[in-house]
Length: 481
Length: 70
Image 1 (cartoon, rainbow over the protein chains, first blue to last red):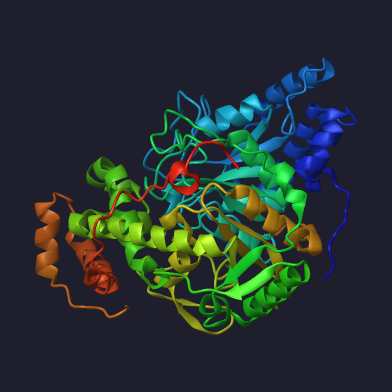
Image 2 (cartoon, rainbow over the protein chains, first blue to last red):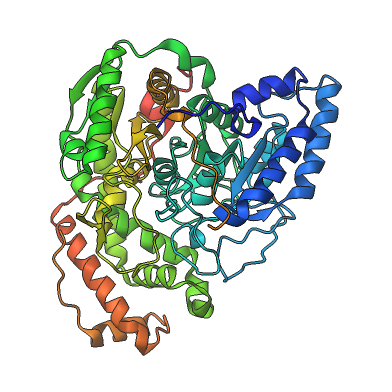
């Protein structure tokens, strides 16, 4: 397998396309039309989008074209076609949350993140497929197809955003990440998924799953593009009560400082034990790459991770049940089976468990704070598993049969690798790091201290630039998918 | 962590009724199963007593002390 350098415009990075737009080598309308045509051609086979906003996109593109031609260039997202997960409110545009509970909801307001991307000049191509309310599965909204292997999952829950970016149906996209929903799809689709610090990006207008765990995530093909998108959406929003009042650094400017002397920790157990053999190999190679770049690699113990499943469950499900309290009683028959079962469980978890788990998060947070005083970043697999089979199984199933023949505790996988950074609120990014023997992508995760996204991005960028995994593209899908 | 304690169906039904969840009787075994799974998961957690804890949101000031930036 070799990295593709097709030169196709839809696979350009945001950084390169914005340079072409700024210098007027291409026009926003021209690129919007190319992208819309590509979406029309591929979406019927890959199912990344629920709603394609052709007219809206062309209107925004014409406006961007006029502004750029008149010298009013807004910055690196001006005229760039993007996609939004369909739980992000968009004024006048259907926001379904991939649910039949309120499938034709047309918000009267924009989520803050979309307001900010619009102000940066971005063009909205459409709204992407997700799991029902970001945590279930509804047959009316089938999961996108993994473009690398059509019999494997495209990940949950921001799968449409990840597939769209991986296949050149968008230059970048937003997703949400409550327990890894932005980073897991990045892992299985071979793109970059970034969840910044809790509070760094407003969630106003992003339909909540679990208040204290929800984050907005970026999906891009490069780390630089993640920095560009984060720059546009970061910053205090008084309409999100958990939005942090803090300075917003220039994320892209700090990418290029190199990682010589960077203190990198890895947890041996979560990296090499009970982990897919191909992932062990990929992660070992990644540690060698980082070491070769001058990072100081040391083994660490990740505190309280063994409790992350219990704490995550006791926090997330009652919060989700609270969000959907009325719908559980009055519209239960319109939920998919997975979401409904989880919501009912969340409804009967005692308040004392919820409070106890929230207090446990304080212990976790303090322990990670100590850890990040000794290490700049923690690196490890994005997950212990490669892309499995699509998630249409029994929602109560406790085991997953893996493509490598092993059986894994389903409940364990997400919280221990991804959800732990939602529980403590620290920033974490997944970047392409290799492939399984079956040809499915595998990701590497970097996490860092709160509000220190620049260091997390810098470490990820150093690794990305020393490898070529971010340059591989999935094959064009055959017509019979 | 993964033991599966017995949760009686009658108690699950009574709990659902008390909370006015309106769970059809055909759906009760699924709730019984997931509740049993949950109880098994959190059993160890209950042995830990986190004292003097604050809300779990971390602030910029707690990390850097002020708002001067990096």
